[in-house]
Image (cartoon, rainbow, N blue to C red):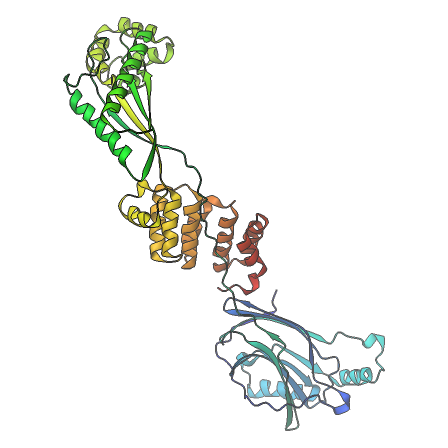
Length: 495
């Protein structure tokens, strides 16, 4: 822990021309020396830790030595609280001045005061002459440690000014710099660029109600609304096949039948009707090498059950129980008939026709977008963009910019649970010193090294250096070079 924390509000400008006395030679005694110095920036403050050794210092009763650390940058000098060494008489005079004349200013309070009694003076004189006894041995070191506000410019150096007063005379020495303050470095913030990989295919679907003659599977446009329903399939499939931003992998035509008749019969009928619709669509479209496949659902019990569950039928619970607990579909249908014939007739007339339908699924992947195309799509139709393309557009605008943030907002809308957009939104917020927003994006991904590094930066800027250090350490152990850099330079990171 630091012994004192001083907030220096104004620079104490000392004379720029200081008399250099060199070593004091009275009795072979020299001024104090500094054995080791650590000088570290912490945001707007500076940590100083040094040992001031005074083992060769001997003062007369009426003398005082004032040792003042100085932070010097160019022509600006900041004087830090001094260490004062006094002879016994000088200390008595200072005490009387404060006690009787109230000449005391707390702002000028020294870092430490060491009083040399007559006995101490004799002991030091004996030591210098080689006569000090073992019981007189002492550690003549003052540890000068503290955190100081640093109001001057970058690249300061620490000097030591020493002034000796006594009987109206004084002499001073200004040491060369003891240590230089390294300029602060910006913490490294981690952005992620997704690796382009094969993404899972997507699906777009359309439902059409194609009517067939009883027990037949020929597609006849003139029946009911078949012409309009077929046109829906042509338009939907054709638009997907001609879209320059996607690559259609396959088209699936799926036919559903209702539960009347036997299950095996419905299976054959629905399969034939699916193939008939597929062939009809292929004959109208230029499909190229795209595969058209068929699937069939002999009896669409799932849709029937959903309709009944959402209805207000008086016998709803009983019919649902039959559906859920009768494995054989033919027995299931017969039990519903026998349980409530009127309800069955209503289902047959009003619900079963809607179960007989054709779905068309287009399975596709998004093509990688060029930057030029991506800049257009992100404003007009982001649904046709992969996450990698959205990040590419954001990177084009430049990290930390409002355009980058806007592009990443779009990415978050389409890929809200992916790590990359969450991390990059947090990183962009950190570039604008918004630690609160950054933490919100990162909390779900605290086990990933880049996210951990960014959490460390947020913690550091929030003043929690220990938590920041732990985040950097964990991220560095996982392989993050940014975190390793931040950990190694944590004493010099800018606030």
